[in-house]
Length: 217
Image (tube, rainbow, N blue to C red; front, side, top):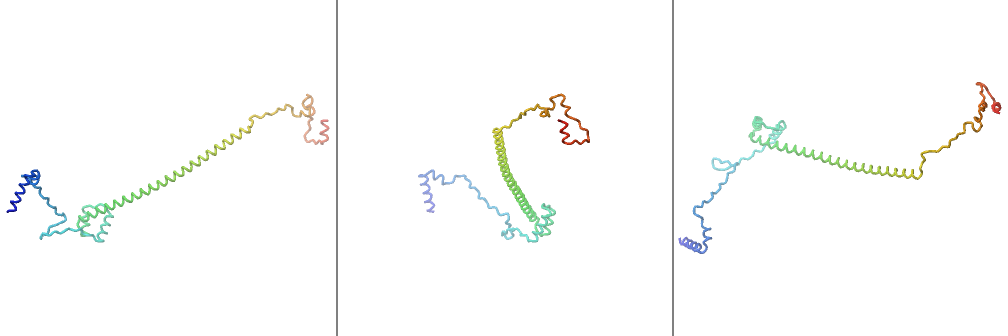
């Protein structure tokens, strides 16, 4: 009781010396404290008759059950309601567990297919890039060969031009006309009567060389 009176006296003295602090320490009238939040019970927790909690654990599938589910998934990736109930009854599982297994298996199958498609596209892209680099290299080689050929053609053209300018070939050739008629050296044709010098010889007639000479003497 004395402790309570001492506390009241101390508070009174504090309120006189530090009125602002005292008003902050004392709760305001009518103030409502926020209610405490209750912790939610885990959804997996189930209350038993004696009040104890037990947790539902996921049942692990056996190898035989997994093999049968894999075979069923290989036949059809989608799971219908009737098929789900039938598999659950055959395997002794909950239909919800069968549906979840199919959902997870279908997601893994899609991811694997995407990885395969990505790898195929990646390999195709790498092959295209390699072909592009090879073609660019061949194009550079062809350009170099073309440049060398053009330089060689230019060099030969310049060489031909220099040769033609040093030794020109006359396009016109002057030929001295010889107005002397045939047999002119033999004084044939100067006289109108000289054509009688030629004597016709009958066919099938043999004339000795000396006789030929006598004809024109």
